[in-house]
Length: 407
Picture 1: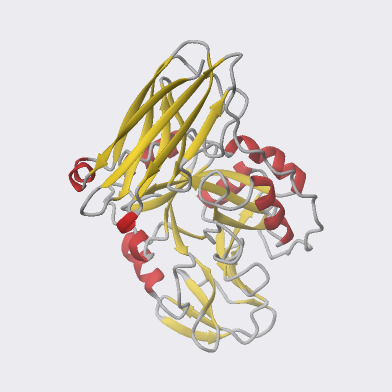
Picture 2: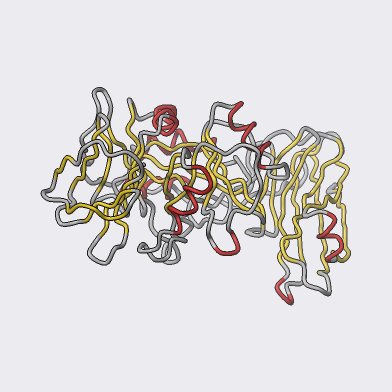
């Protein structure tokens, strides 16, 4: 017999001021085979509630405001949530009070617990993975001995948070665009990590595990084979947890309107997402000003923040190039950690990189080289050595818009 737990009430601004996150308990009996959770609320006046789940042993999933229901069973779960044994004890449905209007927001929540042998809740059926497609030839750029430049994107999303595609569909799309790697960084969850190795092999692309730690005061990309990073903690805690797992943390889109970074930190993360679609006019020097003021030693990276076709920049726009000794996720992390990085507006355009300490411009004939003191040289030829000038440099087009960046 299915057991139901129900909650209803109204969240107020005072609740939001007390904490962004609140918890609604459900006592789950031994022998439970599956859970189904449904949230309903009044969206009048712009209310937005987030949804997640904690089991007796910890994190079991997060979907933010992208979903209003989820299912967890031993064998399968709604994307964003972790399948596995349904432990007996107190489960907590996490409610994030993302936006609460002055008059509050009414809600109702139902938790259905199905016993073994009973009518089982089932997550939505998953689409068949797309067939692999021919990818463009890899782009060979001047690199140090034993190294190779890989083209990638360090910020993408799937159906495991608020993206539109499955992991396989995203991998196929990125490979078809000629990328060698992408980081899959779904919001506040790691449920996608289990799918990455298989999808990477199928489509011939390196899929780097990631999580975008997402809060009202800023987003951060945790890269590497890590456990769940608890977004309810402080950014310094995110950094410590990422470092303990051998990963890297990036401040994401730090100047993106209401999603800008405003969280204080005692220590700076090693990476900064300087190039992001929120850089609306590539003539602006806002990203450089922020980066140099935040921490000039932070390694600049780029990410498309891809969610779905038609509303976002495609994967690889911008492209983050990483000079690597191999093409495993660990090789990409090693290259990032060492600062062997360059960013270009897209995968096939002009690139400015460092090879054996010399600046080299590729496919950049006629562009302008700009250094710490501004523009100072015209690039001649499709492969131009530009000396060993120190500091961040950019390639600019005739309007002064950035085409490429090298730290």
